[in-house]
Amino acid sequence: MARASSNFVCQSCGAATSKWSGRCESCGEWNSIVEEEPLSTGPAGKVLGNVRGRSAKLVDLSHPEDPPPRTACAISELDRVLGGGLVPGSAILVGGDPGIGKSTLLLQAAAAFAKSGLSVIYASGEEASAQVRMRARRLGLEQAPVRLAAETNLRDILTTLEKEKPQLVIVDSIQTMWSDNVTSAPGSVAQVRAAAHELTSFAKSRNTSVIMVGHVTKDGQIAGPRVVEHMVDTVLYFEGERGHQFRILRSVKNRFGPADEIGVFEMTGAGLSEVGNPSALFLSERGTPAPGSVVFSGIEGTRPVLVELQALVAPTPHSQPRRSVVGWDGSRLAMILAVLEARCGIPFAGLDVYLNVAGGMKISEPAADLAVAAALLSAREDVALPPETVVFGEISLSGALRPVAQSENRLKEAQKLGFSTAILPRGGKAKAKGMTLTEMPDLATVVGEVFGAG
Ligand code: TYD
Ligand code: MG
Image (tube, rainbow, N blue to C red; front, side, top):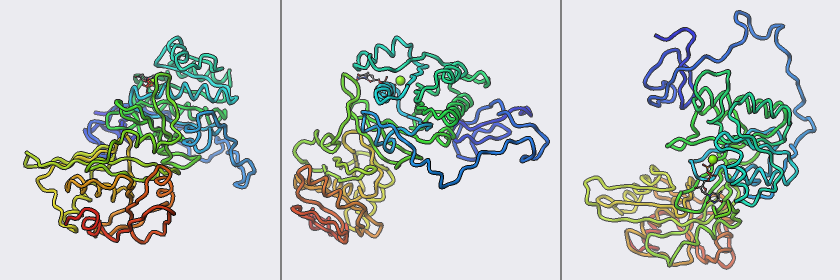
């Protein structure tokens, strides 16, 4: 039986219950509920809003303080993802797989912001100061005016910060920090939540920016409760495939700038270097156009980015054909296969389908529908598109094509990279001088006119 003083909290969504159960009622996750010490509550027995409370400081909405003064650093890809530089007093969470390069990125960021004039402390709970210095030497940053602390006790860290009053603190990682107010082990939900809460409150009250590193679980979420993501102002994910040198810093939440903005980096022997023109990089591995390969002109945040989609369609030896996707949504692929089958008479039964976004990119735009369909058709019919062709457009369940936002920017980017033809939905008003635009009303027309099938 649950003790009256205990509290059971879901690791995944942070919902609290009074008794343990195998499945969280609120998010449906299995085996995610653990027992925790209850959070301290205020004095019991009195209604809130009595004389004991302090009244909050009120300011007018029209207070002339805004916009917040931001600090930009020399890493412009990072500045853009932050929404144009670092906002003082902001709390930022950077998540990513182990070994993807979070510590490398943040050490470089620490040095860059220090060079821009901020006082910076880098607190590492994972590596000793000597190890961080060794990394700095390797990155050519040993002269940067950054101070290091190898510390895991939150109380000691906060005491240090109170004394030193830095403008930026980097905490690597939130999972290694422990607060002696909380009895559970470092890395547990209660500890992660307490540490994130303390650091976020510190950021707000002292106007110090705090960047926290968060480890990511196997299914791609920041380990610890989702409530940490709600606490902070900005959540960035550092993504990439181990085998590739590309790394993408993506903002999934940003109170001070656009979400879904990306910064592209390349991991080199001397740390991360910025990629100013990601399209050229993503297409650099493309050989001569083969069946199944299609270039999609996408928009990531505020920028157009060209990426190659690769499809392979092969007869299956199994009764249940495979549908395998890397970098795109599996259910969206199922929808496009269904539209091809139902509206265009192109069956995929008995065929394995593999779809891959080249370079480790992840795409979530519906504008990629038509490019995916084209890649599937091209693979299935064994017909390569002409080499200088880009494709974009959304497909509706009826098989009609819908124009997408920012068509003109997509075309401009394609033209800049030497593409001369675009296949896109009819009805968008995009123009591009010097480019041949093949505007299509529906998917069946694409099947017939571009691939001579159906
Ligand atoms: P790291 O920043 O330690 O990853 P994280 O903090 O996300 O766990 O990066 C680790 C990887 O990066 C490691 O496998 C080696 C590679 N790396 C380079 O390729 N070049 C470099 O200059 C550095 C510092 C690391
Ligand atoms: Mg690290």
